[in-house]
Amino acid sequence: MFTKFKKSELFTIIVVIFLIFISEYIYLVEGNFEKAIFIGLWPPTIVGLLIFFNLKLKK
Image 1: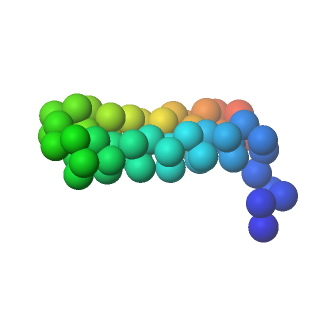
Image 2: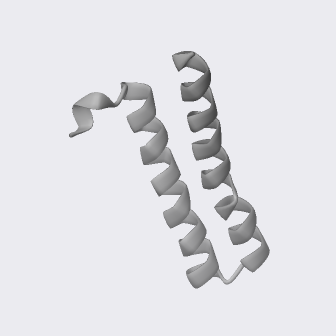
């Protein structure tokens, strides 16, 4: 299943998942809502850039 992905794509997905957990930790444990939202906005941006670059490289 994961053989279709490049190592860089797998690394990016791992980083995105890690950032989501960090954001949840900051929100639930530390109670710093603004910092959690700021960090929580990075995963969709990173995934969007990954999709954009993959589409550009395939053309």
